[in-house]
Length: 206
Image (cartoon, rainbow, N blue to C red; front, side):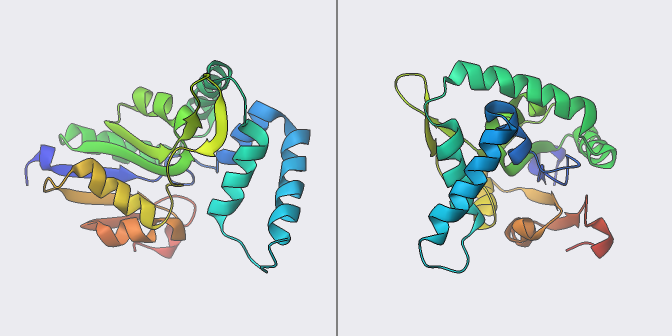
């Protein structure tokens, strides 16, 4: 398949980045004390459901509601740009960036597919010359403030493969998928070539 028919899909947290970025971003926006209180409140709120366990999607949705609701989009985007600069300076995985650079030299399209927030991934992707970002997005109200809800699903697990197929729009593509955790297993299953890269790379290729 020609270069433009090949797609390299990269998870972000733990793969392109050396760390998880969601909680550090929430702390940057709301402060450490408020973020800690939100975690405690979320645990109590979800605990009252009577279930012994709850999933990451529920936890993230509740944290976003508690920490980001009614914040001005312009303020959050300004913080996100500074946060993206910090990622670019201090929290990228050299090996993953090198793999992305190699794919670009081959004419392959590059896409980040991540449960991390698009508000800071878009400037990171632009700097790294990726073609697209398929990430968890924050809903914006008509008043220019965040509603405290996610705009669509949390891009984790099966949602990663679904979003990739939606982006491809039915066009044929040979897909490389880079990830580091169980949250990438459906993306790996969808790919033609799956590569475990990042924090858990010693476990081998999936």
